[in-house]
Length: 209
Image 1 (cartoon, rainbow, N blue to C red):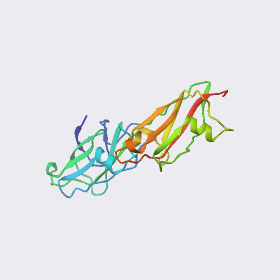
Image 2: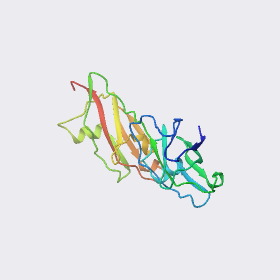
Image 3: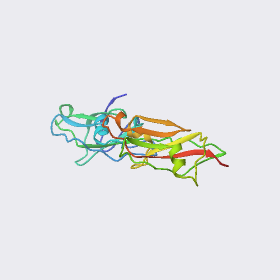
Image 4: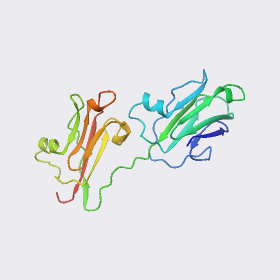
């Protein structure tokens, strides 16, 4: 839900928190993004544009947004801010006709798959790079290439992350296939830009495998 707030001092703005100088606990903030300058209509640090201009760095559905002014003296401004929107500031709404320049970051509380008692995670495997037709981190190929350190044949969960960032695979926003007993695959031709990112995978296996 998009909300309009008047930011006192224009230092920190959080949504959905109503406290201007406090953001709820977050276990993973993205870097701050500053894509726009308030030189025309205003300053527009929009989530959809941040995702487009910084692929793979923001999760699919951020839980919070934290925005701060870059420079300038303390002041009051009318802005629009929401976790699923980002920040909008229109010059014509401001008393002096000029927005501050803002930067925003997003909270992505990644909830990785759990591996229950009696099971354990394997190490991460990254057997493939998306230089051919895609990225294929499949159980059969991993076991074929590691005959003396094979993964169990009946994993109950998998944990797939983007190699470059270490974030959950979902942050890349790509079309992928995940099945615990088969592994992970990403086909270049199915992606909007024709190129998969590089992924790594681990498996949740019985302790005695």
